[in-house]
Length: 329
Ligand code: GLV
Image (tube, rainbow, N blue to C red; front, side, top):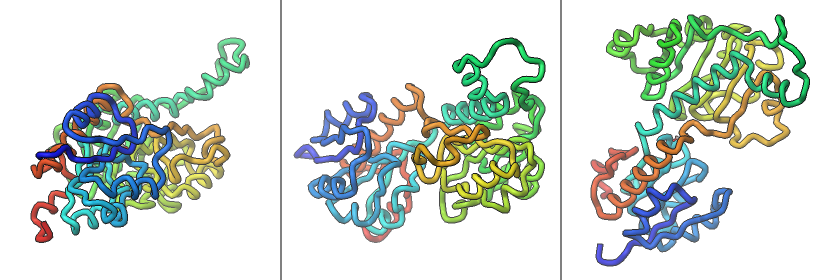
């Protein structure tokens, strides 16, 4: 690189990564709280070789064609907001941040599961509102997590980390995934099940698949109707995996007992959306990876990917490795 490359960064990511980028590039950073509108992105990338974006940005062929991008670096592990096929066709490598947010997201999954099981938000409200006046033998009774049956949908890095935590609670663990892993089954004592069986048997269902065509609305009305009326659904992956309208109906009609969501569709939900106001639904604002350590490491990885792409090196964490075989390069 003779000249410092121009890059566009669509939000203030942690300093650990921004410093690495600013040291080597002329970086323009969108410093607002809300994502840059599409027309701003199109204008900003027009003279850029690199784009560092978040999961809130829709990065399609139009964005890719608006500049002369040599790399797109996503500050997240999931890349469903980026048209990977369009990037590959154009010879643009896409970076992401796998691994470093696995444990933070698994912790949050468990926090949601336990908060729902033990009705923690309701309990907090009761104390804050002054309604709690004495110890209640019949008050705020929840469900046992210990020795309950957990159904893990998607046994990737995060699903496996959730299984590890569940072992500490002596849970019976079922999982469903397109790829069966005998090794993990043996190591963690978990059992493969069809999705239908998992939904029928689990007391807690946690969702960890990526959002792709095959998983969009995987948890639809039929799936929710299969679950136990006492079951809790936890989604810490992507909102689009669960059919939102069906979930509202499921919680209203008692097909399932509770839901706890780190992600929603749409995201964010409007404040007056039924899911936000329901006593049997917990919604938190997509904070799965929101620990200082995970976010710092994500920023560094996103910067490493960006700088590698600008230097013409293979991205260390690439979401479309087929780009390196593509003839268009
Ligand atoms: C967060 O949801 C991520 O994909 O990193």
